[in-house]
Length: 167
Image (cartoon, rainbow, N blue to C red; front, top):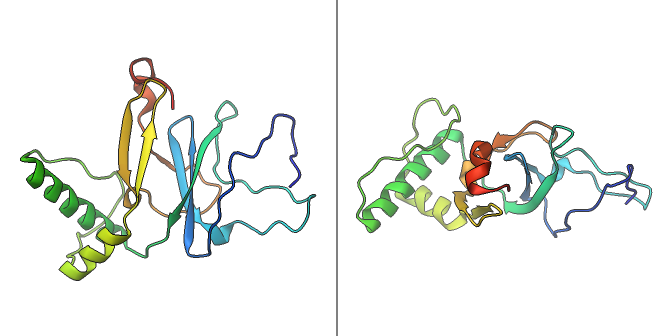
């Protein structure tokens, strides 16, 4: 693969299938999830990369992960996350409500026990860690599927960088 500009580098290489998604995270806290099929196959050493996420000039990609693709509507994902969080709180003995996501989901979906178990079996967890050791564990369902090259969504609030450190 041909690197176009000075300072360009290959961040990572992963094996994947057309049934997977790419999750890119920038040091600004933004991340984007898009289908592997959106990335073209490189034909030769002169091939150049494709834009994964739109970033400010000072930002850089710090992480790339391959996540299993699961077809689920935004309403199904929200219902799953709500039910899974309630189950974890029940096990931990907590009763506090938590915020789920900023995504517009419209009406809330009803999940059958079978569909819930399917989503639970295919859920993957994403761990975001700062330089001071603070971590955030997120469900793969927190990251909606979008087109390659967009701004993405906020994976982590970086407004407290002085306290928690940079990504």
